[in-house]
Image (spheres, each protein chain N blue to C red):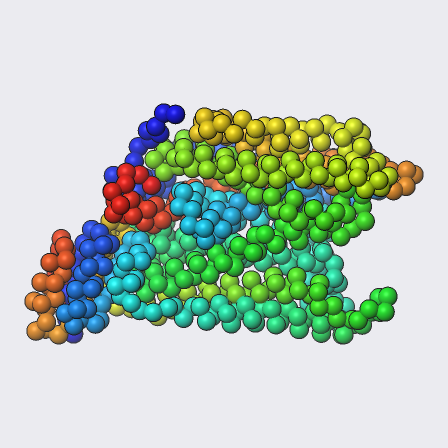
Length: 167
Length: 447
């Protein structure tokens, strides 16, 4: 597979390039952007991030563990206070809430580390420092015979530079 | 009203240049400042070791006032730590775009303040090496902490807040660390390379990063409101006159946001001036923070009045005596400093001229910081020194050891913040750029 890189100076040009490339049948696209952009995200249409599920799992784990820990501890060393039940659900809710937030946050960040950093660690030969400055990059994976077509779409979308990337 | 005529960044590259310029090698004045703050920390460390060796007898703590400067300072720094999350999480969810210029500084401040706050209960217990008694760890005797105690709730709340704030701060920093990695050429390049975790700004990275920031904001919003509520329950669940009141939750949260915003202004105004960041930390940002100060000052002022009203209306002689003592007793100076700084000093901010006059709002923010420390001091000290039985009334005078450790906490905060200025972008580059592109798309002139 060959790779063609188009370099642009606007997120709106990049979003247009993505739409045109998808319209022309190119499916394997990688984007480099110095800013998050709803336009680009909508053009790529990659669906919701799986981090949503991890946050939910973290929150449920946190709140369950907190209630379990407090109720178990209450029965592990039972103290009779005014004839009240050993386990008190209402005050337990406070630590339940805190651990719900804590584990929800930890699972969310672990999700980012795995999906955002670990899984995307390879295949960035086209990256250049300008992509953290004022440049936007669109990398198209295509067969050799599709290169001219990809170059043409990228140029038409406003790329200031279009080149074939070795890799 | 004259139009605001501060410079506007002309390109995304200029935004990178302006903000990353702060990371360039320090000037001698900067080094002297860090050394001065670090010296305060060193003196405080000596005082702490002295106290650890001799015990809490070197403090002014004695019956009936067993909570003093340390718990006051703990509550103060927890309050300061609220601004970062308010600006980063709550204003993010409300899509208040003006927050983008100040959120990074506020988040850093939050992390440093909560780290310092967490130290104070440990300093307060004297035998600091016994801190783990609060933690539910398996032990031979099967003893556990009392999960129905607000002090244990506090342990969980503060630690949750500390970890979540650090995560929020770091996740927000990752794209900018990538930008710093691509710019600096010295040893820090390796640091940024490691800390940016291979950030390339790819679509997958942005997709997961944006979702993470959204979720952390959603989680942090109720957290920030809960943390100071839990701190307030340390007081409100007791039977001490002046403490045992249902108003404490919202009263403490409003006070925390009030002091936190003031501290953001106190630290960002000198940064703006020293690093020529007028194009980013603009007068409209101070205008908006001034409005938040007015709102929270009004809530705090109303709460002060309501405390006195309830003392009178309840016809409870202990409550009435406690508040009389607060206003006109031995330590009434603290009460009047509190009221002057927190209720009276923000009043000129009703005028836009004062909110957009950076020097004016900076001086006001200093007064608020002083006033908010005294607020906690007044609540703790006047409550405990004047409870039910006149035979058990007493006084509290902070010792030199306590005041040295208090000063050292400010030294530590300022040391961490000044070092942070040279290690990471103090303004969120990618968020400012995002606004820049949006403004250009809508034909605007500035962010």
